Amino acid sequence: MLFESQIHDLKMLFPWVRVRHEQQALRSLIEQRRRMLTEEEVTAQSALIMSQLEQMSAFREARTVLLYYPIHKEVDLRPLLTKYAGQKTFLLPVTHRRSMEVRPYDGEDMMRKGRLGVPEPQTQTYRGAIDLIIVPGVAFDHHCHRIGRGGGYYDRFLSKHPLVKKIGVCYTFQLKHDIPHSLHDEKMDRVITPQQAIG
Image 1: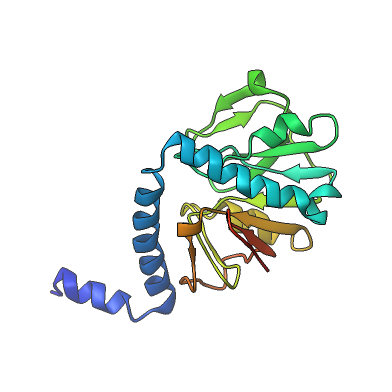
Image 2 (image 1 turned 90 degrees about the vertical axis):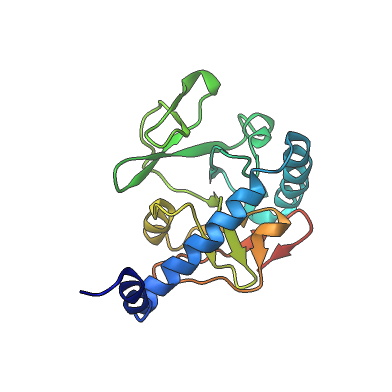
């Protein structure tokens, strides 16, 4: 009978298993670092990212934008929801067991916590065109690869919208030179940090 360490070594021989293992290790480190941010740091760093995003033609020209609701001190772009109310249609994700749909944001009164504990809109499913997708992530790299929370919801959703512009947002410490990735991990078109935009 193989010992647990030997089984682990055998698993590491398979590239996709090794990538997932490396991603999980990086995910744990970065999520721990992110949760140490103060609310003041989250607000200040998020404002810098929003300022860059608002200057981009992809955002200025977009009429329908898929945003996200931040948890665990992720980059907070919620001020955009009120600032551009009436000018743009904002969508937010709603997760199911293995899939993700999107629904229009219609105010905080229409938000309820979903199956993953993330607030989700209680509006009707949106099936129209999306002009821009702003994507959260645990880590990104200079080649616009992304590591998400681990559920694969965004990768599956983004694979169905290959022509829509995708912009990842993150704090500076979440941006690495290279991160482990597989063929199923969807790349971003651009990545924005408080200091720079890549892509």
